[in-house]
Amino acid sequence: MAKRLISIGLLVCSLNNEIFSQSFINKLRTPISIKAKLNLGYDSNFLRLSENEIKSDKIGMYGISSSLDSPIIKPSIQLVYTPYLFLTKQTKITSSISYSYYSASKEKSFFITNFSIQQKLKPYSWFKIGYRYIPKYYLRNYIDRDSGRKDALLYSSCSFFSQKYFISYSHPISFINKLWAKLYTDYTQEYYNPNFTEFNLDKVMIQLDLNYYVTKRNRIKFSLSHGKAKNINYNSQLSSTQINRSYIFDKMSMVFLKKFNNDYNINELGLSIIFEQRYYELDSKKYFIDNWKYYLDGKYKLWFLWDFFAEVDLKTLYHYRWRDADTQLYGDFEWVEDSKSYSKHEFWIELSYNFNSNFLY
Image (cartoon, rainbow, N blue to C red; front, side, top):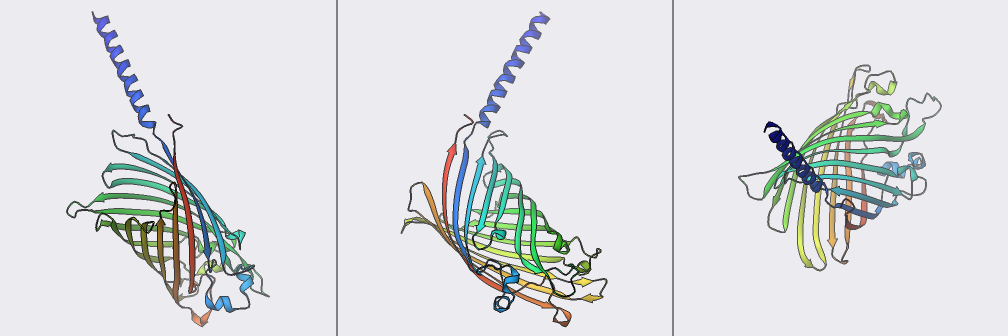
């Protein structure tokens, strides 16, 4: 009798494991969404030069080979996999890669890769972790003050690699209908090429987003963020590291989205405004100075999502960016890290195509 009970128990456990395993496998058999994009753009000042720099006779030293402006081609692809790993709650695994090609400067061209995992907790509530990597981002040519040349100031290519780790949590606000908030934080390492290691930074930021549906077709997003960038090479052996380039920054942004009922072949209108301020103390233990540097960045963005094609989305975008810089440097000496005032315009046409792959079935 005991042997029979043991046998029945083993059989039931075996069937339960088989059913559970099959059920879990079925949860993994979900389509993979693939989104391919092609962005065609134009940048009126792709090295972000100031008016004085543009008018100077050294413009070629800054990295300009042919013109201040440049056409841009930016292809990208995104994969989204959405299995149900925890009961009926959706998990979203997203991976993407993009490449920006500047026809006026091959050195300016760069890759960006992103990877993130999101877990849905309930409606409008997600937990997300992710990673972004830029292997090389070229800024422009700057003076290398550690070159050792005494006869002339040497301009060298200035670039950095960047990797970012981020976490976010979103949750609806129960006492206000149609409002949900997201708390976001990230840690970024921004390390420069050997000629400019004095600029190496570790940055931490925290941000609060508030999203609100004004009506069924109108949505507003408001964001506030604060962060600190630590100059990790400050006060090391090189003479250029004797100035502390750490800074604090604050950013405020607002996004307005309006959906249309195919009026004039327009699906969506979007407008965003971003302001960011940075403050550098520029202190130095060696030189016993206490300078400061401040700049205010602004970016305005307007876009339309059009309904001209059945399977391909068409979006047109306009960006305007500017910087207003202010600094106090004794003797009016221009350090390599000086923030210059600049402005520029960008125009973009974005084509995107979405399709699903069922190769897991």
